[in-house]
Image 1: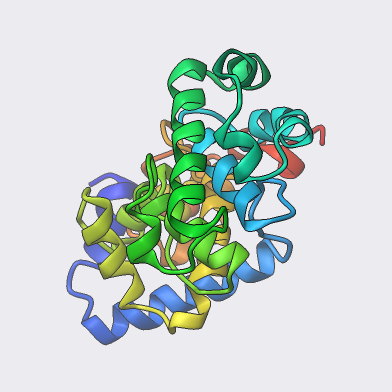
Image 2: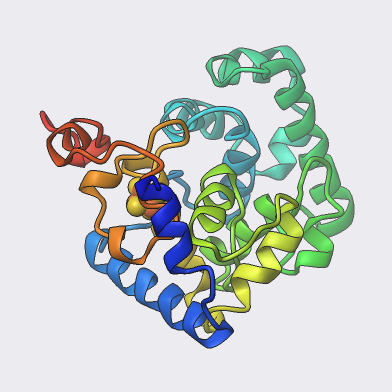
Length: 245
Ligand code: SF4
């Protein structure tokens, strides 16, 4: 039996209470490991966060943070962006990829904000998801980080790690969000999202997680799906945890 099979077997008969306790313990450990976990997109207003989150699709927060100062200097609010020249917006956000579609989306989004909310960003999930190009993931980022309304952000990292942790089996983000949220007090959800996303970016990688260097190894039903050798796993860590950082 492989290490991964043994890990899965250890948690196969876990009770719902056991799963909740283990999930909260994982959250506590992640809080210790990533005390500075936060939204990695730079923003000063809810409008800026909303636009930055839309731009972050299919790219990294670092790339988005590189273009938003120029974008917001030219178009500081929804009223300015709503009447922007599309070509100018495209040039400013070009390096984030899919820049033509993204430029169209954010200008349309700015128009929705001006038409329906006098240029302000609405504060409810129901209103946010009706805006052009805004889904639950984007809405939860804005609600949790600009308006202090906690929510789970099921991006690629959260979805992958929640399944590895056994918190959900769902690949549908809305169903996964419900399963994950049921395990934690609501007030924890935004910070939990940041911590899990930090862990996914630094240690629990998509293709080959660094299991041998993971602080969650004793609590993870997927321990063993990645590199087990501690020395090799150390070399796989990213960002500030990277060996030469
Ligand atoms: S790195 Fe391995 S042990 Fe750690 S959370 Fe990911 S799958 Fe589990």
